[in-house]
Image (cartoon, rainbow, N blue to C red; front, side):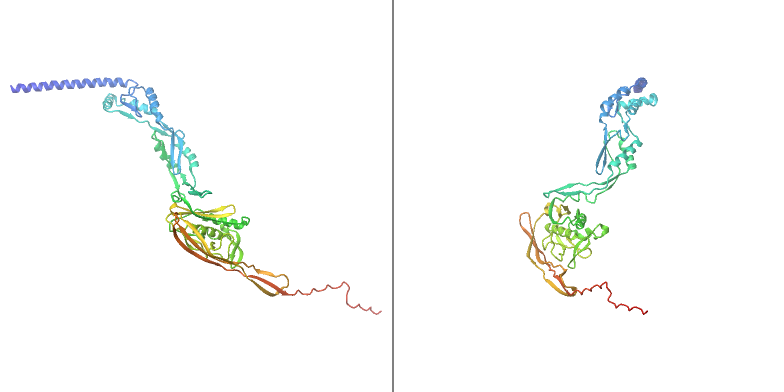
Length: 477
């Protein structure tokens, strides 16, 4: 009985297996017929998309029209070429880039048509389980790209430009950010753009460049917010050589940035006063005389800068007054320099970087020190013990000098004395510091006058035209 039951089970299983195999083969045959019929058509397989646009069951022309309508508008017509100073926008067409939509449509059309019937069956089985998307490739004309980049490089290439600060007439601080020096590397940029433009949706790419940062960057000027102190002095513009020296020296002082604790030396900043550096002869004080010398006038640059430093509350490290009182600055507030011997030095004793600006406007030489508003103080410069005194005259009797009008050998000039005190106040009016800076004594110079006593020699009378010699006696006959 049990044996008969097992035989029945085996027989039923065999029948079921046969039915299953028959159904599978039938389905496979039906699928093969479907694939064969599909391969004979000119339509794209179902569940296939191009660039994300469903095109299954469409002809190539229908698929192209649909993709052009739904996807092509999303392709950027322009590309931003990024470089250190910004972006350069240009059309994809000018770069030689194009999308190969026809190639993508053809690739979509071939899905399910390769590998014969068996290959078609495998593809159809895959498409039933998941969709298949065909990416639209892009092509770049390398020669056109290189030529276009050469033209772009001519517009982008530039030398570095320092960030700058401008001070308005009412002492408001304005800035320009400066510019990085750029040289486009054509070969490397071509390779980078070919890779980037292979993506049709690429809207920006970075150019390969050699960048040269400016000496003064916008970051260097981040703390430059207000004018901390400034001063100006008058000069006689008609003295052309001296005016030339003023412009030359102040141009080298202009735009000097120094960090907290850093020292400023006028001699190091301006450099030797040489003809090779462009300096001209102009009057200077030397050994109680006014003599022409290369770089005459640089002392006025020192004086103007010195007063700006005083009014900014900077620590003064070295300063010397002139041998006589100058006419462009009150006594006790001047500064003289002589390269290699006498210097003007001060230190940035504030908490943030400072910027020294200087220049000429009309007939005034000016210097201003800019910095952070937190370092801004009210500074008062007070002169005490100010006195002026005249000069004496020394008369010298000179027997070697002919009598007559006196001769001035040395001009005299008056002297003076002044003590300078600096008071520093907070913005609330509280006195923070009071310091006696120095007491200057300007010695008077004696006027020396020579009086001659030598009498002029008597003039010799010219001989008469008639001879005074005795006449010769006539010869005897």
